[in-house]
Length: 101
Image (cartoon, rainbow, N blue to C red; front, side, top):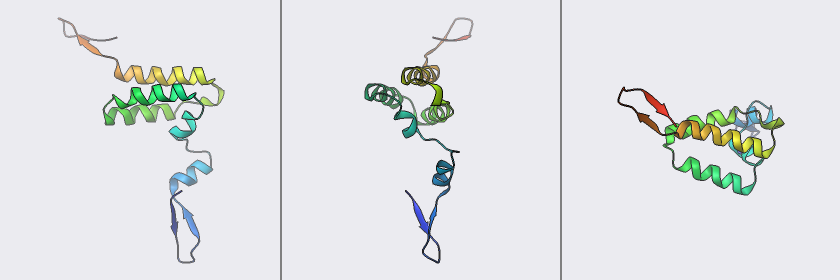
């Protein structure tokens, strides 16, 4: 936990920890804990092959999931759907229309 101190020596939490403790923030760690080790590894492997700027967008979208009512399999499928939507190959036809697979 990142802690700063003020004149009296009392610790002050950074804004991330404040949000987390007040239920306003959720991190990938909390989400990943809901998954099996195999599912976590598959997600990590999938994310590693994606450029960093796109990966950040994916992670932000994953953090928006309401996983409290999902089973681990449902959560895994939702995450993989998000990843696949970003990483689906784009083909250009002769007419110039983009088609995603």
